[in-house]
Each structure stands twice: as structure tokens, then as C-alpha cells.
Length: 105
Length: 156
Image 1 (cartoon, each protein chain N blue to C red):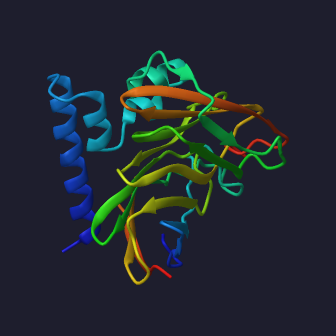
Image 2 (image 1 turned 135 degrees about the horizontal axis):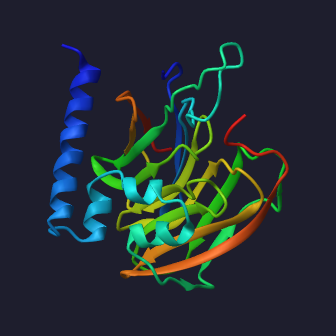
């Protein structure tokens, strides 16, 4: 479950905008066992992340179970200005989804 | 109405349509990648089959692709990997851990105007190369960096 809202920071750096984000998600591989019961913990991971600037896709992430827990992401793009909106949304393999927004500094 | 269920249904229908279209040869590999999660590439079990599934069976090593990762990763569950490329018209960047059971860790579709720069963290099962696969101008370019993993990060 997405217990905590994701964190997004975005700021203008010269002619580019730098974005850093952390999504809180367990990213279970499906290979780990519950130590008490010995049963496998089912895979639970984010498959797709869409990063949008004012409604335009700037980056799409396709992820597997090999992305670390509480995934961190950093990227840069052109064409945004201070005050614009960044929206990041994700969907995982169990159909859960969440989104977060930030204003560019 | 159950919102989660709706989303799942919609997602699985979209995936079904994409699968049918690609089976019929209607879509190029690039379009397949853009159309959703590339299951065959993520389920491939060797670097060669990952590349084949992505559509770039014969990539070139390139000086213009740089992979930054630690020389020694104490914890294989969190290996910071940064890929940067100065190549123009980057379409996608993929991160591959060679000796993982399923090597393809992540694939990023880069829109026009977005830099060929991605930084994130991946899990590595054991010591191996991390390979960055960049698709630019329809061609595939790679670069790699050896990472020594002290404690594997996939099972446990």
C-alpha cells in the first residue's frame, strides 16, 4: 500500500528542470519468504510511472521487481518554468495506483 | 464501485489489445514498448534475449553513454545507478544487471526535450556488470560498469 505520499522536488537549473522523486512502495520481488510462516511473499511492484509536465509526458518509467524498495528517481527536462506543475503517477502489478504533484521552484 | 478493480480491468484489456496487435505484426517494437509494460523483455533471462526483446539485437558500445554506479555495493538491494548520454534524439534508456535472474531492471521512455539522464536505484543478485542500453535515432548503444556486490539483494 502507498502508506506515505510520494515526495517530489523540482527546480529550474539554467534552461533545464531537475526533478527528484521518491515513491514509497515495498517493491516485493516475489522471492522473499515470510520468516514466520515460511510462505513466499507475493510479488508487489510498480510497473509503470508517468511523469508529466503541464499534462505532457516527459518520462515514462517501466519497472520490474529489480527496482529497489521505495524507488528513487531523478531526471531532467527542458521547457518548464518556475511555477509549472509536475505530476507523477504510478500503477503496480496488483492494480494499486497513486499520484503526486509538485510545483517547480 | 471498486476503483482498483476498474483500473485492473482496464489495464488488462489494454494489455490484451497490445498483445493481439503485436502478434498480428501491426506494431513496431518501439510502438510495443510505448504501448505498455514489455513483458517479454522483463521476463527474458539473459542479456541477449533482453536486447532481442527490446528490438536491438546488435548494439554498439558507445563512449557517449556513461554508467555511474559504485565499484563496491555493500547492499545489493540498493545500488544507485545513473545513466547519462550525450547522444541526440534519445528514445529510451534501459538498465540491465547482467547476472540477475531477470536482467532487465528498468526501462525509461524519454520524451523529446527530456535529457538522456536517469538516476535511480536497483537490486542486484550478485557481482556483475550493470549495462545501460540507450536507444537513440533508432539504434542501440551500450555501456557497462562492473559492480561488486557484497550482499545480494533479490531473495533473503
